[in-house]
Length: 436
RNA sequence: CGGGGCGUAGCGCAGCCUGGUAGCGCAUCUGCUUUGGGAGCAGAGGGCCGGAGGUUCGAAUCCUCUCGCCCCGACCA
Image (cartoon, rainbow, N blue to C red; front, side, top):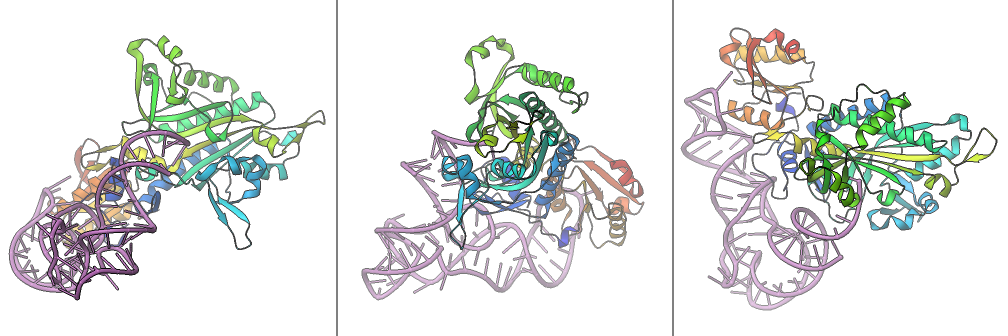
């Protein structure tokens, strides 16, 4: 992308409405613009981040055997009347009426809809277990949206649903999803801790929240410091092996970790005092097992091996994709701006032409830019060097390729790492190879 | 939903108390000089002062009502 022709409106000053650092940086870096309370437009650079996060989520869900699909944002109220949640969900649900006076709603979640789809199409125990997910916009009419995209009313969520024949199967699905989530957060460079959590309006008996520690987090959390030592890689565990999943689940749940709602003082007291950690956290994922709550309410049964109907055991699993953009910035920034992890950066590198209009600089920049096939940000604006450095730092590209008249004459550029600021001078032809 | 605050140029703000026809910095545009960490000088453009009523000769300013946004709390992915 050529910056001179891009919608990438960076701000030198912080808009007054932004309070927390991620919100400020998202506005200043030109990632989003607010459209109404808790509703944001994603500008080109912001959308790239959102897509990169979604892609990591997608790859890890696919690897766990979850099938991608896409459900609509608008749902019929009838389905929600069946489950009883049309009344229960309260004013957080945005209710809409169409021209025929039919009651609709903008979906805050999709348990009803997916159960409806399954009951129409899945009849036999032979067709289970199955897991599906989609990445779709949700709307929850929060009383008080705040913190930019961290608590928006409209937000992008990956939500998955599992259907199993019995508890043992549902337990496997739950554990498989926990493993998948830990891998997602690991690939995003985030240290998440699964914590015993409240089930809220989704209902059910088993639930974990995935919490990222951050002082600006909204949840008060308690955990055993032993978590800080656990190898999160999870690479040694297979999604297909029940034994592996059990071992992984054990690793994730034997140490004490709970959100405020589920905090158990008696259990907490058994944690050695020097290992007790208490702080704020951002919830970036949440998984639920709720058994037959929806399958029964909506009369979804399959024929079992013995010819008798079986109500499938269900779970649902959410990752806040748009919230993760904010959470990632909270976890990765400095005084100059954002420091994107390589896995989600809008661009892997920015090319800074320090002397736009200088024949040697221009030519060298074009040569480097061509190596990236458009997937780098070329700052070709008629701006002074300082402006370009400041914007590149603010945008947080993992690499900066600095092209100035000094090196250009020799066909050399300066390669600078955003985090740590390490610099080296290399031949322009070697840039792509060096970054990979 | 309770409590508080704020809406004046793209962004950050002053002006309001004490009514007299709108200003500063940054940004934008033009020119010249500059050119490796947010340049300097000169000039220019840009505002129904959130909206609607009212008071007044006259309203950004006073009064009423509205709409929007932010913060604290309660609530929530």
